[in-house]
Structure formats: structure tokens, C-alpha cells
Length: 186
Image (cartoon, rainbow, N blue to C red):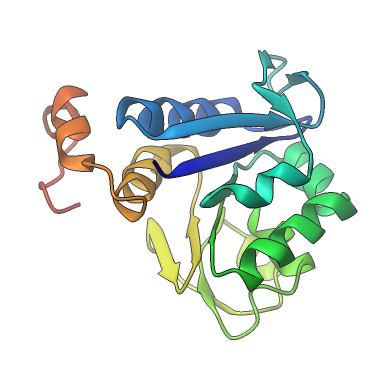
């Protein structure tokens, strides 16, 4: 079974993080919250208990996901262990996914060079590598990026698809098509 790790750093964006974890788990994909500590406080003072604390075992996952949140993105960008993990996973061609403010971590790791990406509004001015697009989700090779809290559903469903899960079934069970003005191929 494919598995994904969502890194949870202090100041993380709660809505993005929990949406991603929830949708991947609904798709029967192992998705572990890997925190800087066992309990991590988000950008809106919501604390979550993580499945495990950040360690080198994360490189055994098929996908690593970096949710946004200004504080969380800054904490991940400043963490040499996260940067090293991203390099190792990239060298193995594994999926590296980031949304909102978190593409700044990809830039710090040098992973956006000659790549297309998206990020939160204004981050096209903060990130000096790659080509910024305004799409909800951008996939370039093994890198997957998304815009912000409102695109968390589209991002998570795309991650399900990339890991071989049935995103369409999850969308239908979650009433995605009735709640948003989207077609089944979005």
C-alpha cells in the first residue's frame, strides 16, 4: 500500500493539513501526521497530536506533503532535517508536495529550479526559482504544488490519484460535486 507523510510544523495551516490527511485516509491511503513534536500548535492555536515525530523514516514513504501556514513554512524552511529529507526523496523520484506558503521550503531545497509551481498569493514575488502559475494544482514531475486553504480539496484529491487511490469515489461520498460548481474531471 502507498503511504504519505504530512509534515506538521509549529504554525501550520490547520485547514489545509487536516483536509489533506482526512481525504487521503478516506481513500484508504496510509497518511501519517509527522510532527516537529508529538503535539504541534497551528497558526490559529489549534493543537494536533501527530502520529509520530519527524525522523529519517519518512524517506520510506511514497509521498511527503508540506502544508502551508506562514509559521509552519518558515519552520520547515529553517529545518536542515526537512531539507535533507526532501533531497533524499527527490533523488528517489518520490512525490514532494507543498501548498500555500510551503513552496518556499522547496525553493530552499533547490527543488523549484526549472520547474512550474504555484503557491499562495504574492509568493510569486518571494520565490525566485521556477515558473509560477495560478492553477489550483500544478504538477511538474514529482513536484506537486497548490495555492492555499480554498484549494486544499482539489490538492488532496490529486494526491489520492497520484498514489493510485479512487479520488472520484471519495469526491462523491463527500458531496464535492454538489457543494462546489465543479465537474467530475476537476
